[in-house]
Image 1 (cartoon, helix red, strand yellow):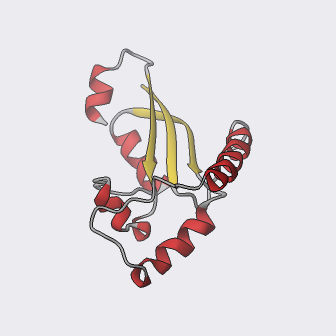
Image 2 (cartoon, rainbow, N blue to C red):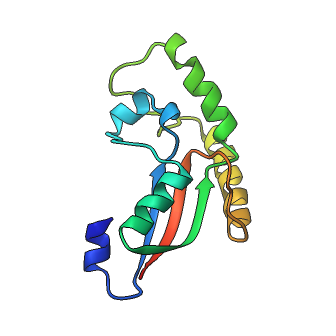
Length: 128
């Protein structure tokens, strides 16, 4: 974040979308090399410390959060390989449903920030 602040022009913006909540860490994170997960408050503090003014800060992938929690809780019971990731869904029907859910959520998030749980945390911040 300090490097972003260093290279941005005055009043420049940074948009971040990062994985949320350490307790959601799973084999998926290892497969895609996720180094860490964040909460809104952690990300706000890190942005402010690096010299940014937070303009928007919200959890995202909120509507899929309950399904992901169920999946994460069930993972110890499911056979997986070390490189398994849940990024690929082979069912076209499931993909269509997920796309509709995420599209509906995107429309809502244009107008409000979600302060409670989501799979990711998104921030728009401006260099001071």
